[in-house]
Amino acid sequence: MPYANVNLDMVGRNDAKYLEMTPSPEHEHTNALAQAAIELAPSEGFDPPTYVDRDFERSDQASFAEGLGLPVVYLSAGEHPDYTSPATTSTRSTPTRSRASRASSCACSTRCRARRSGPSPARRAMSDALAR
Image 1 (cartoon, rainbow, N blue to C red):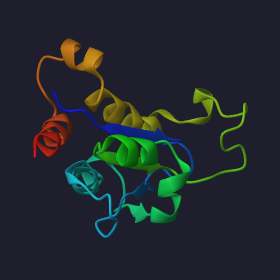
Image 2 (cartoon, one colour; image 1 turned 90 degrees about the vertical axis):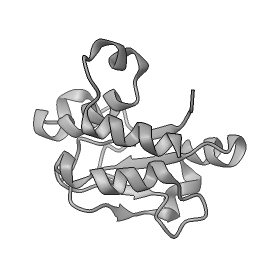
Image 3 (cartoon, rainbow, N blue to C red; image 1 turned 180 degrees about the vertical axis):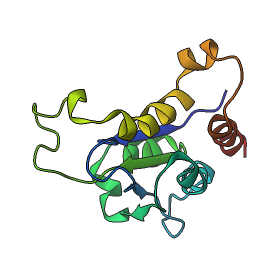
């Protein structure tokens, strides 16, 4: 079974269509999973991602990519005044904004995979990317 790290950092905050991601196609750790996220962003209601490779080393995905050699992708809505503070709660996300976050989490969740009757296009693309 292939493994990967999908880091959803504050997805569901700020502009509902804005999405930051790393690694970009030019980054040394670019991979099929990151490419799938780029390709799927519009179908999940996002604008094309803004690449934030400068943030690659400062978050969890760096350890998974560098230490374990896993494919990784970091997706974020960007920083805001209560970024990573106790004031950040699920009530600060709107259902429309969190739809993409739930879909992305669901695509990577074994428990959710077992409950759904068939793979969504996003989950199929993520699985295909991991299989490459």
